[in-house]
Image (cartoon, rainbow over all chains, first blue to last red; front, side, top):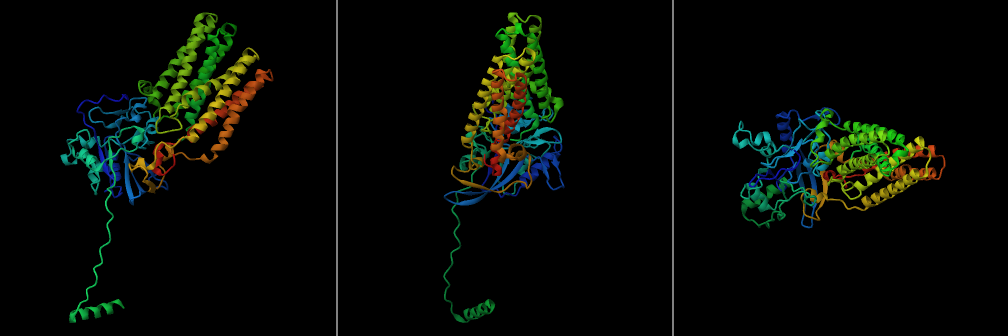
Length: 246
Length: 311
């Protein structure tokens, strides 16, 4: 059903909080996402021309790097891009078959690939470029927020988080319930001023991005003025310094 | 946006078909069926053939054609689903119209069914237009021009067909060609207004807001996620032959609108009615295919921002 579900009072809004301050752009999240999702219930996440000149394939998570320049400072920003599990997902409502849907209980946006007809309209409706077409199976694919991990009781509790979150070596990715104001992710968003991407388009993404901190640029270590030293030891050291400097 | 041949064929062919159905229906509603049931019957036959060909072409666009029937289910939210339902409902209405025109062309029921068929046909065209008109990330589609333009182009292209049929079945008559010329003029003005509109639109967003940076931050792409093209770039970042845009616009304008307009005027004034009306159909078809290609190729998608493309 592609009508958006009525959100039950107290329903969770599971999502990611991504820290653009600490993301080092290593692509580990994208690689682990690909690894997990190519072996899961949904089957192979396709790759085309794997060993050829133009390798290509379906990725749920892609890492861009940008240079940003503001009056305060310039810096490199690494930017992981994936489905934001929007509260107002046009990708869901445009779907003609009901394959694309948003879960009422936790807000996760999913595709039922068993009934998807592969019309690609949902990918046109997403301004974030989060949906990618599976040429091998003729259906659309997207981030599932690792729904087969986060509720998977066969996994130790500590591992019940999305693959991208569990693998991030910089702890730049956080997972949790953004509807609960006391959750660690909600507090992080509150403290760091987490933002919506493309807020002007009105999709109301669940995932939030933490902008880079406005830290002071470190100044170089202060040169201590050379102390005039005395004595035989100092004279020997000066001699040594002279000899080594040759 | 990538102009897929299947979609260009779908929208152009159904435009001709449902536009023609609207002309036939309105013609009958005005009480002309009694004089020319043959025109109606051949016309509706042509409508069914063209619409079916268009819908079949659209199936080629699907990754899983065998599941196409599922697309009729989500009409409450999806314009694509509504298009499917409307196209399906148009068949029985058009066939009932044809049956009534065959049995009792002079009956009020034929007039009524004519009006219903015209409405069903134009309704389907409206649903098609709204598939594009409802997509917020594409400024060249999500604007007040898209839906009226599709309706005007359907009436224009269907009009050229109606004039040709009218000339073949009944003989040259001034008024259909004059009306078709008026539709061509309206289509030409609509297209010019659309191009003027999209050429002056501001981009929907900036790369800074796409990656959550403060307003006014200058952002430059440093590294793309992958070295090769991917689905997002192929589908949403289409750039091939964009530099020929202005030339193609002139071709679409001249071939698709101006020539059919002049040919219709020639026909209306009694000059070589058969040749001019047939040529008008051919020009309109080629011109509208070019126009539809441009509608896609010149449409930009917000997601291309992430790859440093201008939208």
